[in-house]
Image (cartoon, rainbow, N blue to C red):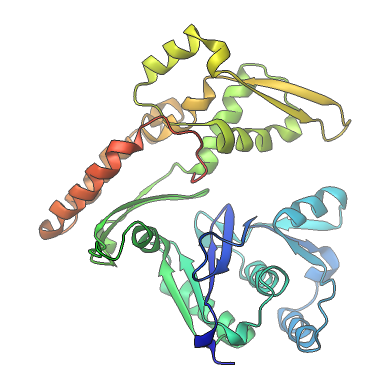
Length: 345
């Protein structure tokens, strides 16, 4: 069938999560952790034979157990069986393990989206500072392994900017703060094109927020099992964290009415199955605060996020700065408001 008559497949691979679906949908069809669990015996097979097995099984119409899982299934499988090893294909925004990445795409296409890659165009994303060799290898896998008829690899910051504009505002100029799980970039975009020489990176990302929340809860002596502490901190970040306009006022609010702002987490110990609970207090606003006051987390990097954005705009060509500042000021007005949830971090 003609690929133009079917919606394109969109796969946004990030360090922590992958979002996938079809063009035209309001939201992704699936959001999965970017992790692969591979059987040790399967690892001993050669890459070429594995690829041949995938294509042979797919062409035969049989999707058998290929001894590897992705996403939440991979995490569950690794906990229940010691023969499965977890592999994280992407680290700090860059593909670190291409074999695992290829397996991940295979499961995304055939098991989750359940589509024939030969009948759809594909849109993939990449980080702003990705090397050209990585894009070439991505194209090689997509065209030679999955036989896709067309492929477009876009910088995720540009796509984020495009999603914020309507058809009447198509200037596509602005500064995008791309905070992922493993990397943070400040990306200036002028008329849809990334100003590569002005991109700034920050050594603080979503995982650092999780580690900081984990540290705060551990120092306060909360009753959280050590083997489950990181996962609890991640859930706390996604469900209860928010940014505040004034950290001192936020402390006073929590101290004045602790019952109003205090949250409680309930979980089950993985080893014994016994229930437990812990309080969630200051870390609700102290977690995201590492971007605005990084010295509370690390002494190695102390430049606040607004200062990094300002440096980014100042290093851009002078004729683009007015438009970049205009968009940045609009974002700044709502960037420190008390909004529940840090799901984008």
